[in-house]
Image (tube, rainbow, N blue to C red):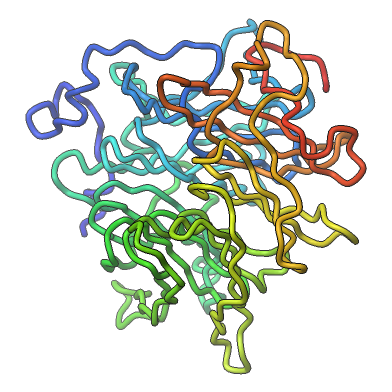
Length: 445
């Protein structure tokens, strides 16, 4: 695909004839609410000082979705120097995004790569290392979303990132002989509707980054989540419509113009019932030897042994299936178990709870209902409830391990809070939905 196809402007008025999804946003107001509506994904920075939260604009009430930053010292959304809400607009119906630190950066601390189904796009947000941090992507004044140099879109009928891109994962490139290639990073993009799997790469020191297409393959439709093993470089992809996990690796390509190609490997077939809704979230253990899978049919956490053999090929062996509540969705892993070993946190969307699994003894050790354990000022604790979906386990400075969980509820409940749960050993309110993220500067919990 020509490089020029990757630099598309998303001007709804200009593309109205060819972009019906975009056309639906014309005339809609900007979301200026204090909170975050339909939190679909959460990612913490390595320091534990902030969490990036993506709102999906699931009901299309506004012209775009939003990315906001949570200050974990106060569990409040970051405001600017004037005390105003700060948010960066992204296309609606976003998905699981990825964060990449910028090597040796003095101004830009991270890149956030955000997929969106509304216009079949990938947006790149530059997170600036300031106090507080800020996000920028050369936003368009008409639509509010990122400019052409930060935004790949398929609204003209070309789908460089697939039809309904829903998840992004990052990985290192293997060490090549060319030093310029050594620092490149790979971005893996899974698209739900047509099963397109796209791999690109880029130099993270460039500003803005310039994405280079490596290869595209097609898998079963319904792709949902993707992770890449740091042990083997193998990628694992769940699909909601197939009772198996798709796997692939990257091999050297045939030419300079095709330096790397995707090699699909045998899928991992998992036990399934007849509900026809299967794989959701994926996460590795802290040592990357186990792959955890949120499985919906039957509702369970599947544990896979992905340790490589002597030739570097992972075993991909099913170790156990742990029965959970309805509709497992997101996963988070933290060293909060006995002796500092991993526990796995699974958001069960249909159960209004988060289940905690000890993968060593292979059993659930707690169930965390999504109801506040204390009264929040101005919030009725009997009302704050809903369906947990996205999660991030964060080792917060001076507070220890906290679990941030987004409530992706739909009417008539429609609670869009992000709930904070202490999960560190010895916490006073261990495994209790303690409070929500504030919409104004808060007091440190």
